[in-house]
Length: 440
Ligand SMILES: Cc1cc2nc3c(=O)[nH]c(=O)nc-3n(C[C@H](O)[C@H](O)[C@H](O)COP(=O)(O)OP(=O)(O)OC[C@H]3O[C@@H](n4cnc5c(N)ncnc54)[C@H](O)[C@@H]3O)c2cc1C
Image 1 (cartoon, rainbow, N blue to C red):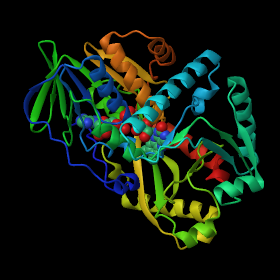
Image 2 (image 1 turned 45 degrees about the vertical axis):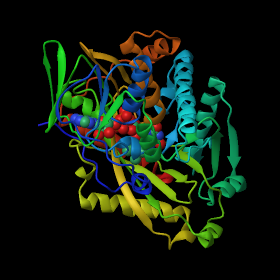
Image 3 (image 1 turned 90 degrees about the vertical axis):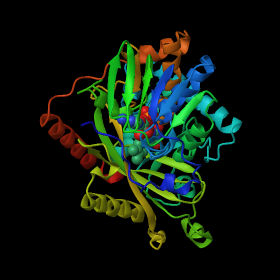
């Protein structure tokens, strides 16, 4: 039995978009020159790039769900250019510059696709605020400032009154603004990309692959109603890569959660007093991420959980879900007490993969099987650039970017066996949450 993706229908971003008709399922016996498994940002980029290199090849992109229903459509929509969290602490400046360049090439690629296909996804060069609440957060901001100076990256201090004019709350004492990141409606972007793939990419939705086998040098992907045979398989399956026996015991499934309000009405906007279309991440990592969307919704994201059974976002039971929603409400009201009458309309979770050494995997896993897996939670930009370059690797296309990505990726470290792993991860998450409590 393998874990199959089965995200529930609670995601606000997915709920808010107009759906296009469902794509066909995998049925019968098929053959393809290339199969891409997984229709998140990584898989979408793989399929697009393969098609560019091989316009006459038959390329099949398969997802267990509809495109946009997985983690790529459930995230907070920060398209991040800067190396993230632990990568920012990397001792080698060249490593960080390569990450920055790779992420920026993803942003350029997405910008041009959004404009070429007129994808209606609130794509915005909004930059990002990193906000501190108290002393501990401010110390993190000081450290972040040093890192920005070392990187040679522009940033701006935003203090007190100026900050509350943007955020509509004086909850934060100070922030650093970096201009290079983008914001997006992630489900709208994923679906828009999926609907505008090159003609020789066939998209098959609602086709969970429950077995992978090999016969006469070709890979066979089996679903309930069909099978597809291919010499080249590209996996954009994130944490589910483990289910096919690859990177087993190296990827860690982490779930994080978000809630959002309905769009504020005109009176509520007056009470809010802040601007539209900004995003703030916490100075202290385990704190709360907030967005005010371009369409007037306030989104709150926090809480990390190690989830053994990550096949369904409903893996978290109703009590835990209720608790998380109540916590989000407290966080919201601590910042926006004037919006007490504005309800949350959706609360959802999603799973992604991290590794203990915060290393991304990129490359060949077996003869004819390739993957980009484990983005450590920065999947929009990283999924896009790593998926693109993975297709280049498969097609033998050399480039400086391909050298760069091979330089900055590696092997995620081995995890200790259960129950030690679960206990270790849970205690680290609890400690981080406690230390970041002022920013939750
Ligand atoms: C609440 C939340 C907030 C986040 N915020 C951000 C953010 O602001 N910015 C950011 O960059 N990242 C963020 N992330 C992380 C980001 O969403 C992920 O890193 C990213 O989606 C990974 O992309 P991917 O394409 O590699 O994998 P996924 O998006 O997980 O796609 C994998 C796909 O593979 C399919 N699949 C798996 N197994 C099978 C199978 N057996 N058969 C068929 N199909 C299969 C799944 O259905 C899925 O669609 C957040 C994540 C969450 C949950």
